[in-house]
Image (cartoon, rainbow over all chains, first blue to last red; front, side, top):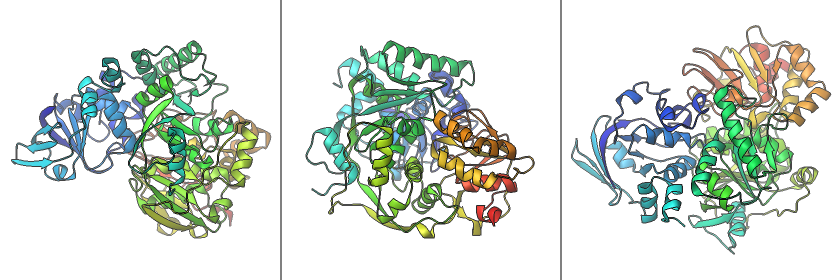
Length: 164
Length: 421
């Protein structure tokens, strides 16, 4: 799995209430959720994000609620992978379960600026900043997690027989 | 053996003699919980899996509390989807308007959690039941779906931070101040991926309700769970609410903890978390003149009878300040009834508050008390993130029921001691 895209960068403690405000949780429609993604901290997000773009963030990304709507909104907005210094645990679990690639790599976060062009090779665990030419090594996903992401989530993996 | 309380419960539910931090295990679930927001997503996933039925109709539990009584047509459709699912699968513990309460106050009250249980819930505040000596943690809707289908969930065994409590709380200081104090100390990711285990002689001086408040906000420090050692008070509470047998797990003497904090409860002061993170805590010597527009007393954190009684003590014979909308929300129907019978509701209404039926409503900016730009609320809720209670330019200050009531009277963030002197 290799993803290429423009970096969209945020700070520490990006919580699930700003990723998808609760006032929109009266639906579970993916496109509708995506249309409000990040709007409380970045009104431009939905207009600037393009398919494949890579979200970069600091510590404790996704803290707060257990709403799966949060990684769903990010994924449905076109973001291919989220790279953060650390993730809140429920968000981390939910992201894998719905097939959103997420990577913990503090060095990459410090070495990528908003707007940089980034390549993330999750099989090799290499994040490459095309704009600066710097690359960062991280833990590659174990194979079963790679399969879940490729299949589009845990349930899809159960259906395909990759997770039993 | 050297296991923490949490590790012992997880080992028992994984059929293992011993587990270690970092180990991946598959555990049996004593309860799988969802609400009207997270369950619809789980139901869709459940149907995709192709499961024919739920693993145990007495263990799957759904509570319509977030946007119920239905706040709009979409919310009504979500509740209907849950209702239809529970009817179809003959789910015993489906709580709709009339029986429902805020889930994390309702489940202990209904005796649905006992010490030693493993509970997952598609709601981050599922960690509340740690107060009763259970392992309980928040998960997402996909985990809820798989849990409903199989009765199992995988976990990475957490390491733990130990909090040794001693002493006794002062008047007008409660469990909320304790947990805000701790989050202020360790930060919103201070316990990330880990357990918070509460022990020490000070535990006995905390009521079960104070403990429920403390465990409830363990997630606000990033914790996987927040668990209390079982004592006589826990046993009495559980026996009053449930007939089930239970096991009280104690950490081994030589259990290994990442860190240990000693907390003297007598030194904790009334604490307020300023916007926009629960770790931005201040005590009254650091709080100036902060005028407010709204007060919310309720939520899964502080909607218990004890919380309402603490607020009522301060509001009795007083009026809320002009232009401070004060919303009181008993967390369950039983709490509501008791508040009516014991005259609390009369005190609130005479003071100029409104009293709502149980709902999570305002806590997450759903309905029943939304803020507009520039407005400030003191709330006994659990999160003060940007836009949490409404407009992105509104502010939420987290506090105890006593501080919230005192603030309602004074029209600014106020120390209960100041009002009651």
